[in-house]
Length: 420
Image (cartoon, rainbow, N blue to C red; front, side, top):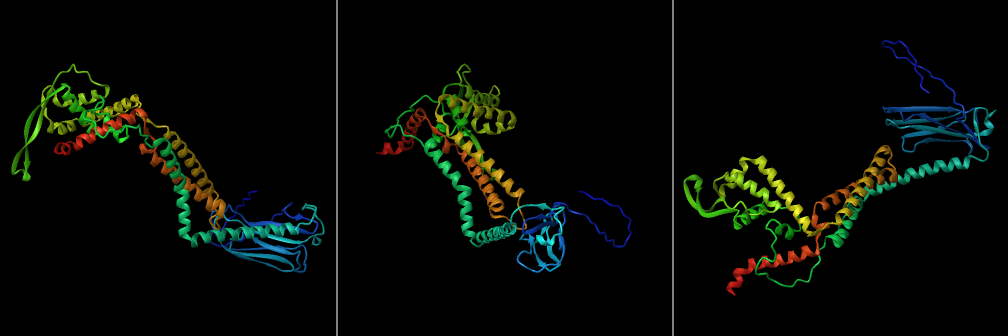
């Protein structure tokens, strides 16, 4: 119920007494009457420095075991007192949105009538005492658990690390073991003395790196392959290069590149490379050392061509079936599971967090598990960015990769083999 009243006052204090009657608040058992009144509500947006509340009994009574008084919740700073005529509560430093309750239990014989009360059959005092003791024990247990966690901060951090990283790392290890670990094909040759397959230069390095995305080296290798195949011509040349701050010049080896046979058939991913080189040459010729500057002169369009080159190389690798990426689905499911569970638990913990006296399970543990769940999701996202953890070469891809590795060893060791 909301009560609004209007008054006029300029600069003087005014005091208002608001009186109202509760019906059904008191619960009359066979032995006692239970009056549990929330004397301060949790809707107040501001804190309260001091609170005093008094509940007068129907008539005076002795301070016997059937006459009890409690103030709650236990974490509010306050004291209660009982006198033959009334119970009193005094509380201080009540934070905003914090309720305070005054609970009084007195013998039923003090009532002349039970009209206006809830009448319940049976003995009520044992259950009321057990309820209050349980609330107190719960508060003390929560406080001890939190104090213990703070006192053993090293152990707490270790637990958080295990919960925040352990499940995700275990899942990554399982995914790598079953879906990312390379399977050997039984190939046992140390050297291949010539290219083992007709695969284009743009495709082989990603295969050996266990990746699909090419880079600038693959772009350059494709250019030289086009020169080898006659799409472009090259002649040895020298280009002066300034040294000593321009005081001297020295001649360095270079290549003069010109257009060649335009009828040479190009693979789909080689066309963007040819488009870049054609734009650089512009119907004439150019030194290889000048290509970078000319490419940067038309940065936007050439950037789009390079992006097209990378996309087409990835499609070409997919078409060859060199990689198996089933593990990505498991990582994706783990990211969703840990992420959703973490956000949900963190939201539940923060939304219901009791700042005045945090609860161990519903506040602290739930929030911590939410943070750990989000941390696990982040670890899995980082793992998903590392393709070799969840993707491996297929049997066909592994067989070709091993042969190319043997050919690379041969090229690397060739000078030593000649000396031997």
